[in-house]
Length: 143
Image 1 (tube, helix red, strand yellow):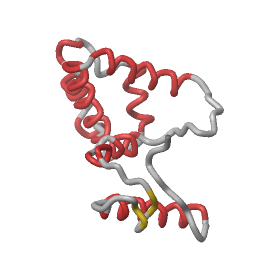
Image 2 (image 1 turned 45 degrees about the vertical axis):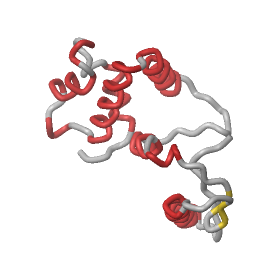
Image 3 (image 1 turned 45 degrees about the horizontal axis):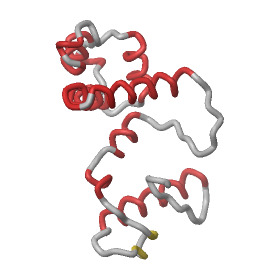
Image 4 (image 1 turned 30 degrees about the vertical axis):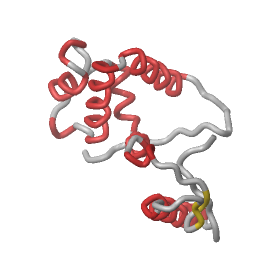
């Protein structure tokens, strides 16, 4: 299936198809329950992350799972919150979270932001194409 969106993952989560025995782990249960032709690489990655969190910080995992349930259960009309696909969420959990990159593309306050500039520049190009805009300012984090 490739990197599909979060709806198939949410369906699995709410139906608990993959979770028959928590001692087996999330990924193991998912792989046992979902036929190979129907598996999502994004869901596999998420289950692996959940296994790691269950072992190291279960209270954090349960908070994340409760937030997922809340976001998929209730309509929240808060302009500063977003609903993004699982691949986007997984992309946000990478080594760039360790990077401080104040400023804008090509105009950073600190050196060593070439990769951030490349990614934010491409995201701006895609946003311009998507919305038919001449300019777009894209940064992955706020606050």
